[in-house]
Image (cartoon, rainbow, N blue to C red; front, top):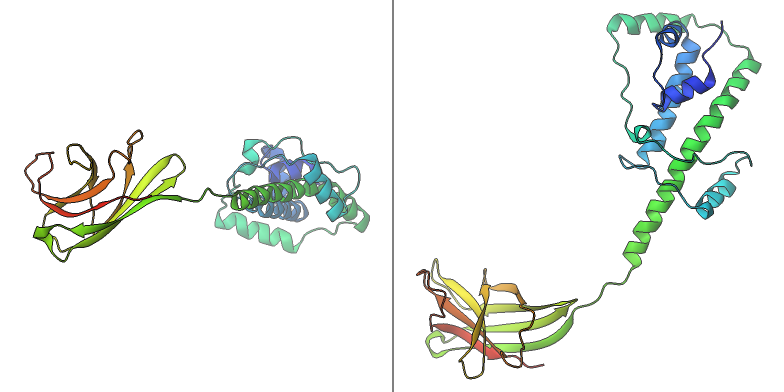
Length: 269
């Protein structure tokens, strides 16, 4: 019996070529070729699982040389030049009816004996297709790992403290307290405001920057809970607006300061 061509089986396992009707009929009747196709599909599946659903990346020459040396591959084995998109999609096993499965099981029990020399020749031919696929997956995994390592090792700019303030209670809010801390994070200045004071149900507390004479004010936003962060608008000079004020605001739709300040303090560098 003439068996399926090794290249045809390898391309079918990788999804590079459909199985024509004549080849399918042969596979239905030949347990040896079916077993080789199943083994190839398992090898391709393991190689692809290294990278999940992402496309295979072409490694650099240095990476491939290291893999080539580590695996002890023959000089003639080279990585695939490119990996088609179809090669990274999972290959679902073809659905078969119960009768077809039983027929295959019967055929497997009566499979012909393949001469040892022929089996060795076919395994060698199939290996010439399997090794580049597995090596390409391993190389791509090494490249991805190197990228992740580089990203983890890349230094992150630390936040720099710009100014801070203790926020003291105003006369109507005896017992309240708070703090403000301004940090420089990259291009942004962020102030963290914390207030320790009971708030009536539904009350709104708004954070402001004031001038020392309280003749200018900038709203930073509403305080959520007892502590929150606010970005100070670019161009605001903290030397002009050094006072942090937290007010209690009624639900009246008026954007102006209510005049009811809970805590207040002056930022110091």
